[in-house]
Image (cartoon, rainbow, N blue to C red; front, side):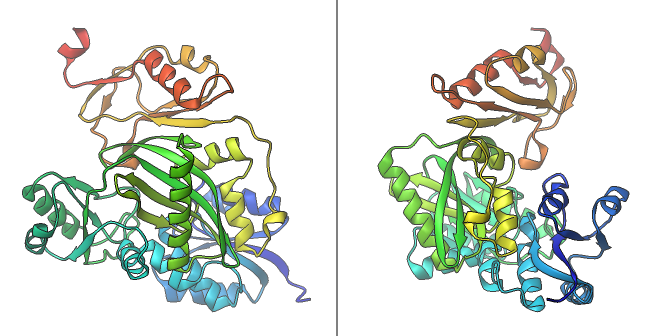
Length: 414
């Protein structure tokens, strides 16, 4: 016995700051590493550390210093961008469980994901790597339009473009090159992905990997508008054969990437040639997917991730009551700048199955065109029942709310 207090080191805060509460609920101290420590952070965490998370050497040195005082059981983060840092820290601190560095990098960098899946022969999109718009145009001879352009190491659909023309491809690659850093300030990978456009509906697969074995917990149906996610439904309404094909593809992908001891969120398209991997994320699904999965399976993906980070077995993870046979979220988006209008939200909140309705713009307020997951205009979460699936509940809500964005005042009055 070391005699030190047991603690979990949390990197950043993603889940509205609830990571600290989650650790405290297990009876452990919380060490918080964050770029900027607020007063609230200082009050909540037992050992808050303000530090530049992009300076890996400084972060590891500080963690080793803190380890002199605490018995650090695990490194926990829900932040997609910090998954590799957490893996480097586990290695440096000698923590035997959790995602390893190689697997973390394979998942975090979309270029590496494509390379590893191609080497293993696991269903993926055709792709090439380019550094300049001119290289992208030269590579287009091997692709049919539309094609997808995306940065290797950003997230949340940032700078992802579905390109209908050569001019679109040039502009998309040029736009990525103009960004020296990604959303959180990390240096942008100079190699840009040019990929085939995958036809068909999109899904995400929420899975758990433990001691080399992986299992699928839920498959989420996804609605998209361009590169922006407009809705999720759990479980995805799929035929049994399609469910099994997606499940096996994801298990093969996780094995090819070396993933273990973590929760994963894999994006898949069910194309006319079968399911294909879009990307693999070594953390729980974002947005409200964890709430939907918990409502329909009883498993809280974030709790699972925390337990795996400290070496717990699946049997030690709490399972909550199943609240509904299906659940869905719909996001409010717009394809243009304009004025927002919608009907009485209180009537919508009173509808059967509605759990939460939030709108970030008042009627008559101004909205800008939605370009990514970060600038949507609100959302509604609903639960289905045995008599009415969540998708149908969500459709009824959208019809009742009548959410619209008008480009001009004349459109509103007419």
